[in-house]
Image 1 (cartoon, helix red, strand yellow):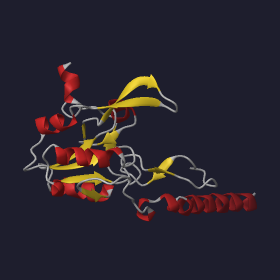
Image 2 (tube, rainbow, N blue to C red):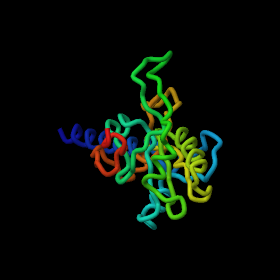
Image 3 (cartoon, rainbow, N blue to C red):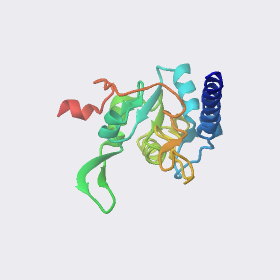
Length: 198
């Protein structure tokens, strides 16, 4: 009986160690962020963005440019405003639901923030739409040194290793995978303001 207990304890200890180090490849410290698209403005990692927010919470603003459904149902960084760069159309395309561009994006930014005082950090799912949002903000009047793409976005990139138990899942980098504060709670002060006016 003692031998079985010892074997069980050893087995679970090995499983713990294997689980801890087996997931190390998904650790945010190992992720090398890449810019997904050329854009105006700069680039920061999620951790760098979080540090910028903590340093100057009054004038550094985090904007989640995903669709309203993504913001609510998948979650979002705590304190992030939602101004969608695109809207879901509700119509099925070749592979998934299609999106239409938000024609008011620049106006929406200027209605809430000041190009002279506010630094904008843009985030999307994995870092592509946020690149477009940076360029749109510069077109709307923001200086390039006050606009940043948050690389890796909220969810991060998909695991491409077919041997990984996480294959196809968004586990590589991103705000959520870096363990930064996020929530499902929807604050009426942070959601897309045109929804409140409708």
